[in-house]
Length: 324
Image (cartoon, helix red, strand yellow):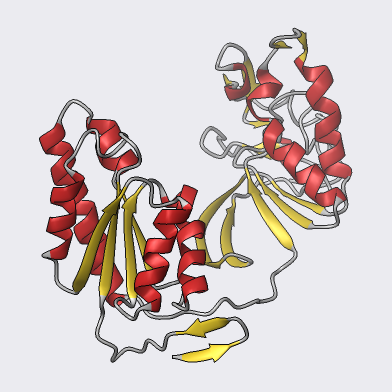
């Protein structure tokens, strides 16, 4: 052991023999009222690498935490497994216990035998017990392979990707953009707005849906910190938190979005008429189209699955800007 500041740090390396302590929590009657916690303790003690097993009413209590601390400080264990509730609730608690006792906080593992075993099998005690055994066995197996880790600070890319440009995606994008972050807003359809753009009124106030969402769509288009990627889909995500590499497939509109003025002159001469997805097939659209009049962006898209490639829309007398 080495002492630094107010902590004693226990040296654990790859060659250190795992000495695992397993602590089974009663959680009042949430666990102990369904399964035999004493039998679980004995089972844990039979697992490879386990040198100590205890049970207690509430492991998250001060007394429960002190039990773990005393065992670590006495040199009895160098790995900790707590069989209790969800790690989302108390993993930080028990990691701090390990740290305060001088054990690297990442030499801790938690088995969730409450939500995953007893709560969902209250009427099947045998089944709950077997599941609890499985979770403890898995946690112990993982604990045998744990190595000390150190928390590191790394620089992050000050940008974010939002998938889906419905009302929630748009609001999130605007909020983040106003905070100074670069936002990539990806939408698989040719326009933003999502399902809310299809609604007449919104519950519970019965306000006009278009009156609410249209200004937000315009705000997204005008916000300099938002890069709008419509008609696009995420195909791969790699990297880690703060530094993701995302591959996005952008489908072609077959109309130059920089040149198109959205005049609509190409629509009338188009000979193809199909059901408009935005209108759930209840109204027609042409093979060259925008989903609805307030669509953002307002440039046209050619549906190549239905286009007969007659070339009428691309004629100079139809598309004067030569965007097609």
